[in-house]
Image 1 (spheres, helix red, strand yellow):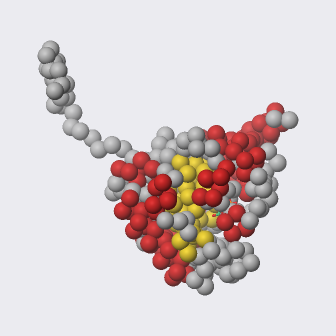
Image 2: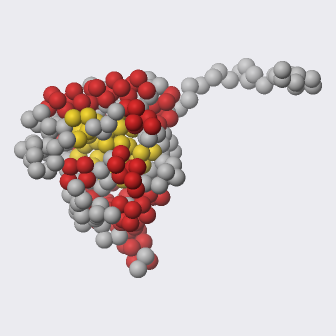
Image 3: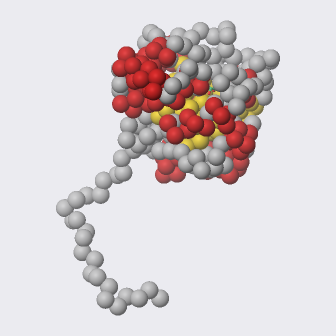
Amino acid sequence: MADTDGEQDAHHYHLDRPQQPPLFPLKGCHSLDWGIKNRLSHIFDPRTGRTVMLAVDHGYFMGPTSGLERIDIHINPLLPYANTLMCTRGVLRSLIPPTFNKGVVLRASGGPSILKELSDERLAVDMEDALRLNVAAVAVQVFIGGEYETQSVHNMTRLVDAGNRYGMPVLGVTAVGKQLARDAKYMRLATRICAELGATYVKTYFVEKDFETVAAACPVPIVIAGGKKLPEREALTMAYQAVQQGAAGVDMGRNIFQSAAPIAMIQAVGKVVHENMPPQEAYEYYLALAQSAH
Ligand code: R5P
């Protein structure tokens, strides 16, 4: 029995203040359950509603690509500057310190390597294992217009059903095949299909023309992949344009880990994403950090 002797009278009822619903910063996420929102808060900084996801999952079909040969040496020093790490369960278990206490977005599809038709993916992780790994979201590739389009969409919808059962966000990753156009019309189609079929948020590519229509027509948050390595100033410009035109951040890999100064680059990307730092200023910030590291 609790000791109730001397218990204070409760009287702070604030009768003049109606209870307000807790605020949640992410677009289209108001109807989600508490657990999914809490997981999303380990991906998107609640102060800005944006994220710098560090993507290092390329090995799941590319093998040890440049910059990812030794994740322990090249990637782990970047972790303090990312909001979230996107990786495979193999890398997570073997190389990422379990003391990493930010969100992990787990690559959950796979199958073909770069030697084969890439759209022929299957789900590659059980939701049970994702929960065991305590990740913040699972990611699945969707190949709209690809040879195995329906299979890849089905992978996503199965993951969404499992995610909804357990409170796990699903990132729909729009994949661009060699034969597919990278324009706003295609990105609107691919991102909207992912969102309509239940993706909690969507990753796509930035397009120079009309990206704001891609973001506007997608009812859930969009993040952009970095794509192939660009000169640092161009990559920062792309990130800036994307967030100014409605993206909720970046899921950036090669433009960070293949940079001449990855630690400086990820911090400059963070300035652009979270503080709206203009690209030239962010580039100078990058140069100054890169120089002081030498
Ligand atoms: C693609 O293989 C992965 O989904 C990457 O996570 C994604 O493409 C982002 O990496 P990057 O910025 O290098 O394109």
